[in-house]
Picture 1: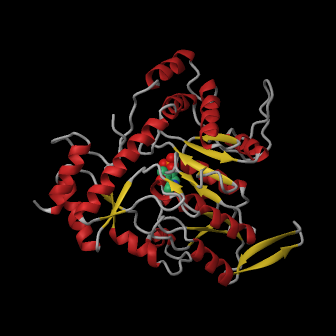
Picture 2 (picture 1 turned 180 degrees about the vertical axis):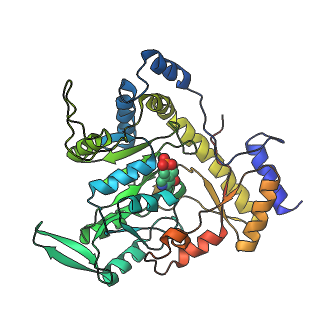
Picture 3 (picture 1 turned 90 degrees about the vertical axis):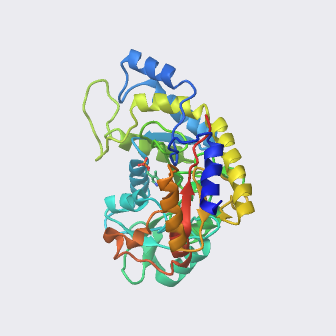
Length: 388
Ligand SMILES: *Cc1c(COP(=O)(O)O)cnc(C)c1O
């Protein structure tokens, strides 16, 4: 039996599906979803007012150990707002990684800012602290701003202010976030963690998204828990969280009847009906993680037996194993595998095209992306849903 058919057979065994199509990741509704949704509809508060949003925020804050959590319409909006809260504006620059979902860089462009792409580590798939330090120390200089009495880091070549850094916990694997935060502190650059894929992943016993100034989660349909569409901002600073909540609700000032708005706000607040679904989902997070870690360990031993590189959680980390990853020797073999599995009803996907190669980001700064290029040609995601 060929290696590829052995893999397909193994995946079909795990999911106990002999012929049916096996998706990459599907949501699981095995708890109070219908009950809470019904209660939400019965209450008539399905939109911008209602108890579920607050309850969901409290549960997420508790689970992640963050001081405050503010719910948003989706993860992309949450990233946009996080960048605004860090002062990212027209013609500033934001450091991020080229290997991520396009939303990370899009949110930067919504602010009129430009992404700068630095390389990843090939064990974490997240931003490399060495590459970050190298770029900051060779391409930027510190300038004193007499207007704000603060130092700021400026790109020597472009003259633009470097106003944030957005590392990603790719596929749920925690990046070296402690080192990244400490380097960024040296350069006075705030860190926003794109933890959209890493709910349930911990680095040195601390939840991802709680190391930087702001953390961002997503509850899109393909993520580890879903609200249909949704996102969350994680804060350790209560005042910043207050400001975020204010901006998500059109910056409306509290008043029994007046329409008073004190800023250009957004309609970014999560609707109550989405939060009802989210509350039922977060109640099951431990079960989802347990199931996903069981699948991961089955994959790990299977791929080790047949001699294919399987990516395991890096040192000091607990991964949620949102999407399992295997690496092939080269692009041609990767493509043969993608063709075979998708032809046989088992969904597999290559990793995203590197963002610096997309038309709209082609002119952005991108240096020495050796690891990102290596991984982008070889990595394949395989079915990873939690078991029912
Ligand atoms: C899913 C995702 C987002 C965006 O979240 P949405 O809720 O889909 O808007 C951002 N970054 C990464 C890395 C993601 O995987």
